[in-house]
Length: 261
Image (tube, rainbow, N blue to C red; front, side, top):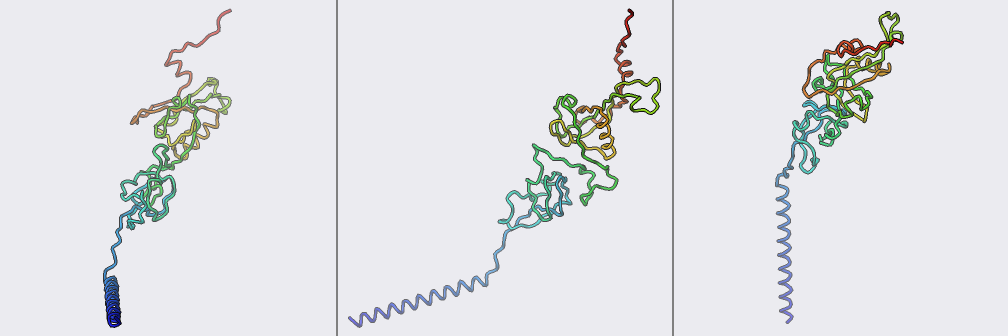
């Protein structure tokens, strides 16, 4: 019995040693294989990023964008990968250099933003091109009754009419005898784009000098009215202004006279 027990013990010991040798050999083989295998290839994908600092309310151009490789796992889910999806879009917030271009950085189609300088006047460096107009965005207040009943929308093209009660003694240093107080109306601006609107406050784009003149006209106590143009109507109005003399001649209004007693 003792000899049998000794044989079993030796057998178990031999089997254990063999298993340890096999395990050690397997570990050594796996370790060597891992060291000799080439590093795994990390998959990448192109992502559109800002090539320079892009301010808010900027119309994106090709010069503002570049492609950069991102690890697939690190790529923002909504990041754009084609320049054509971003060029022409208007940013609603600033974008830093190297920052991925996300659709959320663009204006909401339901609440469009606007740019002061149209894309055609922007140079390759993002600044206004030489000799481009000195455009400014300015706001004017026009009640609905003088703005097509309040039906105007952002993107509409309008003409601006100015009406003032003209008193020669007030506006002229040496009025002539034939100059009498009267109303005067004229289309002072044509083909003006509406950039934004908040109730009866309209934002328009004009050059700096015109902005000064409009500010003066508003302060003088006159009235502004907006005329909606039909789409693609680029024709000049040929307006020369209107006073009572024009109304009388064109509409043959009768001039009241005193009745005899």
